[in-house]
Every structure is written in C-alpha cells, then in structure tokens.
Image 1 (spheres, rainbow, N blue to C red):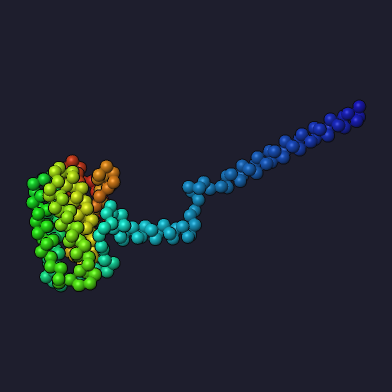
Image 2 (image 1 turned 90 degrees about the vertical axis):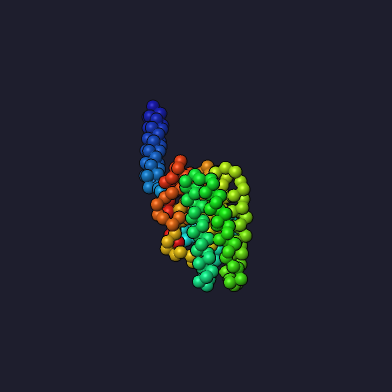
Length: 228
C-alpha cells in the first residue's frame, strides 16, 4: 500500500509540475506578445526612412515624374532665351491659359478658337534664336504642341478635347520649367478625379481653383502642387 501511495504521490506531483510549467509558459508567451509591436506600428529603419524621404522629395520637386506622357524634354537647368524669344514664349503661355479658361466654361467653340491662337503663338517662336539644349527642348515641345493642338481642334466632344488638353498641360509645364517663364506667377494644380480617377494636371495664373476637366460640373476640384 505504501508503495502504491508513493506512486500516486509521484504521479500527482508530476501533473502539478507540468501544469505549473504550462501556465508559466503561457505567461511568458503572453508577456512576449505584449512586448511585440505590430508590423504596421514598428519604427521604420533609418535607411528606409532616408529612402522614403528622398523619393518624396524627388516627386515634390519634379512633378514631371508623375506625368502620364514621357515623350518630352525638360531641362534640369533653365535655358535663358533672349528677350524677344522669351516674350514669344510668354505669348504661348498666355494662349494656353485662354484654352484652359474655355474648358472651365464648357465652351467648345471658344476652346477651338483658343487652340488655334495657341498654335499660331507656338509657330511664331523662332527656333534659330535658340542654341544647344534650349534649341533641342523647344523643337521637341513645338512639335508636340502643334500635333496635340491640331488633334484637339479636330476631335469632337468636350471630354475628348480635355484629354488632349491634359497632354498639352504637361508639355506646358516642361516649357515653363525649361525656360524659366513667368517665375512665381503660375500654379500647377492637380485634379485626382479627372479621367475616371487617373488624375490630371493643369497650369493656372491664379490660386483660385477653376477645373478645366470638369468645368461647371465640379469647378473647385483640385489642389495646388507647385508654384512656378
């Protein structure tokens, strides 16, 4: 009997030790879990932070990285044209703003008229007055302007015209940046809802949002991204 009691006591002690160990393991595991930071809340490494900051900086300072079209030239350092050429380029910008205003007002006839005037102003810029990278950039921009303006004038429907205007707007940004035009007096505005959520940019001479992609339907949709 004493032997059997001894065996029973040993079994009971083993069970007790096992239970305590499991509880202790659970507690330890619980403390460990409480000390963990979920992945989404964990601090980002210094290297990762530096990369993200650099990427954001590039996007902020070069919106052309986010443009839909990539077939244009934009100069890292603005080319300084002569006074007469700069005046001609300023006229191109002014004509562009007239196209924008017509689309804001949902006016197809005025948009076509303004596009024709802009084509004339683009053609009036004399390339022989430019040299080197300035000449190369303008020849690139001029060809793109004339092609897209011609297509915009001949295509039917306000929405399709607006699609061509978005391309013209991206070229305009490159022209302004490449030749240092109207510095500090123009604003790059982005509408994230344009073209079924793809988004589109335009250039404005005012901080007041007047959306050329939605016109009277949604005139204030947009956010200023850069002053140029």
